[in-house]
Figure 1 (spheres, rainbow, N blue to C red):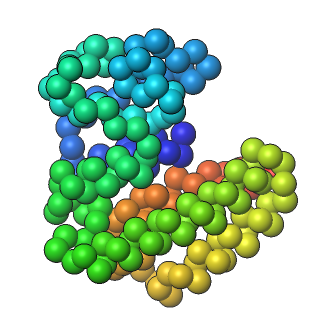
Figure 2: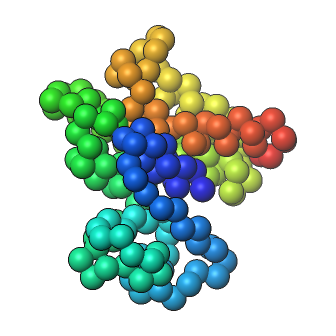
Figure 3: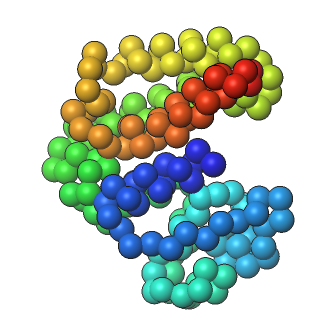
Length: 166
């Protein structure tokens, strides 16, 4: 999942100690739906005392949605490189770029690769997103939330187009 990929990038960036538990999306275990994410989507993070994945502590917080998890990790690790520390304007810019990517690129990605629409939608969305970025380097000068949010989609776009999907 490109969404889980985002979270792995962020967890690794902040050097968080974590345990991964893979979920079969075709046969989600009852404990996952009951204790972690009733929506059944991945990724989801259980934050709290270490326990078995299928038996999280009652004190643990269950946090679904990749971008919410990235924001959560940025709060937990303010100097971890997800969002610029101590610069609310730069943090807002990062969030705006991520929101734009979500509203334009991921919609085009799903249309082209899940719904069979033209891959030109993806290329047009990429050009639109690229126009908001600096000419070179990272979105805000350093690898961070914008790149962590976009990279999993961009890698998959390259792979899918290279193999004639879409």
